[in-house]
Length: 385
Image 1 (tube, rainbow, N blue to C red):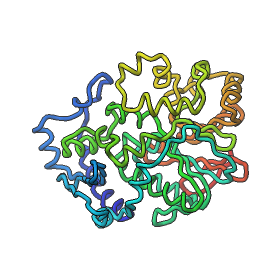
Image 2: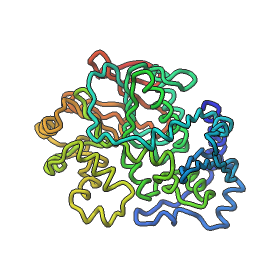
Image 3: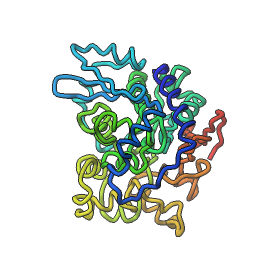
Image 4: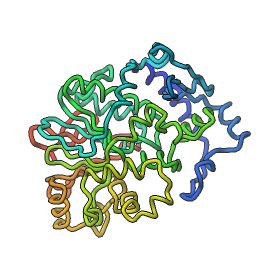
């Protein structure tokens, strides 16, 4: 795994250097994903100048497993037979366990997402493909070791949405998180992978913010980026059943926030998770907008887009109290709204943890231990909230 990251990161450094002299036309929200692709001649020029490496993408096709990846602008693939997964370890230093496929196929959704008795917890949001900074934060605060393995014992790690889009290391982060999720289980810990608006955008073929590298990677595979995360793909099948609201101790975790408008619908945490997973993810936008309940969930008052705690006129504190009472929580932990650092609002009732990691320069990690909240910096220091 570590070698995979090193090799891929090297290719990405080259791409960044060359991109510095390229200007990209802004994408209109109404443009279709196919408009993101350049003409064939432009693509040829791009491939000639830039070396793209990406993957692996593992697809579950009936009784066989197909591994696809891009290596220096060339599509490579391998059909796995008789549980011979050595090719994955050899090519990517990824210890892929065949039991992972059985576990994924046999997994059942936990829509309730309620956990208690957690003594140590860290959370991070909106990493947007910034692998190096994420690794630095996790290592500095002893969540992982120098070999990127789980070191947090029975602690919990919350990934509060928006791994996708903007950055160049999305694939690496996804495989890292999956590996940590499996390792944490073995140690009595847990990784909570939650969905943000950018995950939903990719799943529903809104590719406006996908990095050029991944548009090109998908093109080389003769598909579009969203199709790399269908139910037939390992990563897609894993991610599309992940939750949108999670309760841990007295904390409600949600990517953007919960709103009074959402509460007025009378939906429970379990119902919200179920509606997203079964009725919104991968579904047609027209059908979603035709349903008032679904339309609210995916709109500006829904849990993936709400900014009412931060943008004026801010939600009054008495309304926050009503939200907390409704969801039986004392704190709401959110990302989505980018800030210079993690902040506490409404006398500690709302914690905003999107510390602008997406910029790649600096960032913080939210830490809960000894019944206290802390900001964890990239140099390892703790600042109590």
